[in-house]
Image 1 (cartoon, one colour):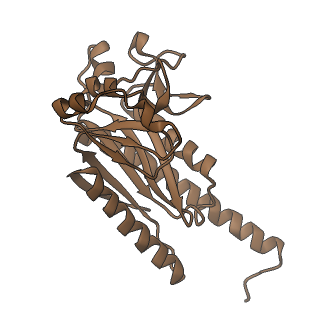
Image 2 (cartoon, rainbow, N blue to C red; image 1 turned 30 degrees about the vertical axis):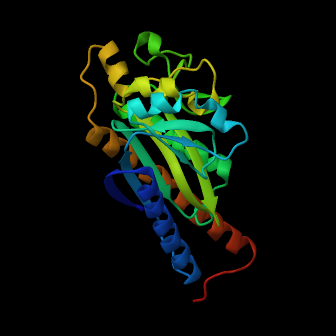
Length: 251
């Protein structure tokens, strides 16, 4: 099982350095022939807009430099996939550092695993998370507190990168962030697609919003379960492959 490591609150650059350090450790274990189950880093960031290297992504920062300064929001370039997003206090950011080759996961399957993990966590909180076939992430219908059938607002953004098939970056679940800060950008480059939070959804239903600790526990719990299932499936596939090719254990 991957270890869950709570980094607390860090600025984006320091958290990135932590990601790199853990990726290096997982790759070193692979070189030694050891199986590293990986790590799941949990963090809250200081207010920051991260801009990917995708052509045109910077155009989706619509606030002026003065507006950003007044809001206390920094800008950082990122090497993850995706477009532009916002991170800040009240948002649960999860960075799984996993050997995807050991888990027998391609990028598409890994992204679906992340979505499934968040959907599982939302279910544990009594909310219904949904996929949008046209956009990565997890969505909810805000018309009835998140229990409808049509994804209207994004509650969790995702963007990843792999280095020698070890994953970096991950997901950002809006628990109780300052949603006004999302007006500084076109979130994920999706025009006209609003964002929401677990706090807003809970209040719409007359319920007490989950705490960051509760959300973190549910998300990391669901994620580690999904990773364990993927690891077990990969082990079965390797065993079946070995048997098919005549690699039988000796008496």
